[in-house]
Image (cartoon, chains in turn red, cyan):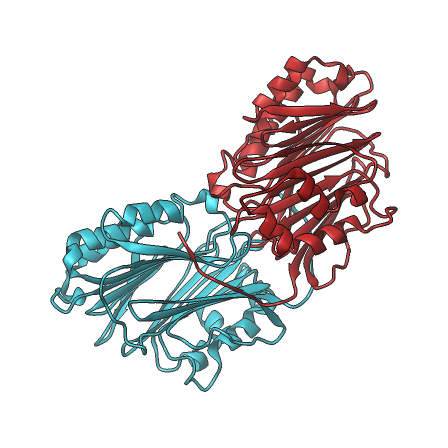
Length: 309
Length: 309
């Protein structure tokens, strides 16, 4: 029943002189996704963005950039190489390739170190680790090219490990519906006015993409007992929403631990009721991104049962 | 500078009808150690026990049992198979094979799951994980055979991650001596009356074995910045010592996090000043061992710098 929910993430921004990404034909995107050993399940579009729901997570495409997340044992680094090679290195303004903490790193097709070596065949960049090796940590590879991000170019990521409580139980149950999951997670209230595309995996797992103008959110749920993981990612400014979206999702899903990663986002020092922030790491890169990583753990002794393997 | 300090551990107890282990000739032990890709550096002996200092950790041999620890990317499971095959499965009373939390699991020659499949070619047994996958956890494989351990058959393991403070700084320095390390760690006071054998590795690393009658202790230090690890293991009854040995070593080495593993030991619910116990797991196996695992973390927000890779 094990599935590695933890994602790799790729963001590529192209130069103004490059072709608009949304003008590229479908074979380009099918090829990009196939390079990660994933498939396109469905898609939605609006004036600004095409959002693809994938067999392993999501792809969002705007005219000047793409954001792609893939979970499981997918090879997202190959999608990065595919994209840089086909667009040409000159067309690329900025690349950020991330890997989050995995449950079973040894089952992955490659390590982050391997991925960096592969990327450097195509483009120069710096690699960093944020967080201790024995605890949650987060890897980034960012390109060296001259590029200046707007300080409003923000991304917020909430990664929840070992969810519990009634919603977690429902997500692990035999009978689920997408409507009920949406209601339980209060998605209409939390992400109001978004067009959505969602998918319920068999036997377990749920993905949703939402777009509203240039904004997106995506949630991926791997509910499996002993290795549950939920990721939430959005480029909306979380400091201006009426409801505290991340706090609400943590309250609903009751993870044993969670991480918050922010790009040009000031929610890194967030306080959650009943959670301790055990470590924090921040860095500012020349390309105009301030990257924050915070690791939280429930402030209580968790008594675990041994797991028979 | 990375070295995987975290150990695999093997304990084998033989039946009364088996040859006394200490009567086996040296070629047996050289072969056993070579199966793990390790070498014997030196040894000490007393009336009850032979203690070998290895290029990767330690081996202790009594007439009825052996305890072997190996770190790095050593293949301790092969030593287990070597031993069971040569002694004959009928000679074996009990086997416990453990793997502790590794920093870089993907660099290991095998996963714990692989090791269990390998062991089951030679002997039947149960495999368990104690602790969450995304945090510190600990694997055990224990044989199914009828065997009854004495409730006084105790082992205590203290595993310290990310040490800090003046002793950690000294251990990472250019100039070290074994005498100074012993003084700083107060080894004479903590382990009084033990015969010792120690080794200073180049460029970094320190190992010590101590024996006193049937009792042993062993300490292995991997001081490398960003991936430091110190293990302490002993079969002495820690509840009867004048000094609280584990508390004292934690105070001296100031790890960011630590684990305590106990076999028939009642120190699992130990309180450390300034440390939170975040998770605990216990199980009792039919062979008469109660196994405890506790994971501790410093009760403070640690602000980390990103690590350039």
